[in-house]
Length: 148
Image 1: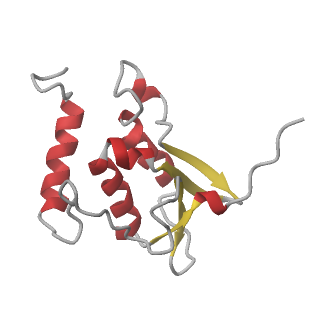
Image 2 (image 1 turned 180 degrees about the vertical axis):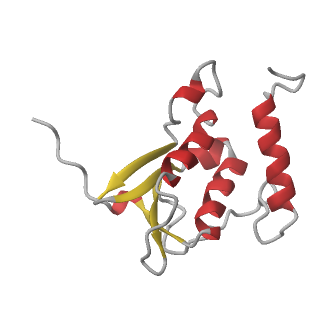
Image 3 (image 1 turned 90 degrees about the horizontal axis):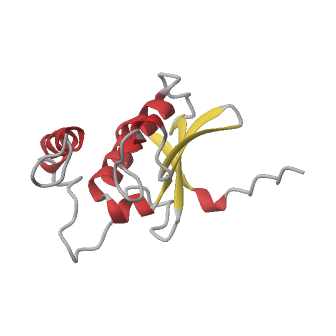
C-alpha cells in the first residue's frame, strides 16, 4: 500500500527504524546535500563501482548466521532501479546481490545504491561496520571465466 508521499509501508518502516538507529548517532549520519560523503572503510575508494562485503570478520572468523548474505540482500530487494514494483520482493536487487567466493558468503553492493538510496547504502555499510566485516573494492577482483 502506498501513502500520499508515494512511499509504501515497508519503506516507511525502514525510514523510521533508520532514523531511530542511525540519525541519533552523528558519526553515522548521512551528510547534508553538498557535504562530502566519507567512506567508513579507507581501503575502499569512493570511486569503486562495486564493493564486496565478505562474510569474514576483521579477525578472519566466519560470520554467522550462515545465511546472512541472503538475509541482507533480501532486506535490500526493494531498492532497485525504477523503484519497487509488484513482486520485486521475490528477487534480489541488482544493487545488492549475495554470492559465494571460495566458500565465503559475500554481498556485492553497487555504488548506484548510494546515489539513488543514500539511507539504504548507509544501512548496508553500517551493517558491515557494526559486524566488523571485511569490505573490499570489488573491481579489484579478477573477472570470472566466460562459459564456453
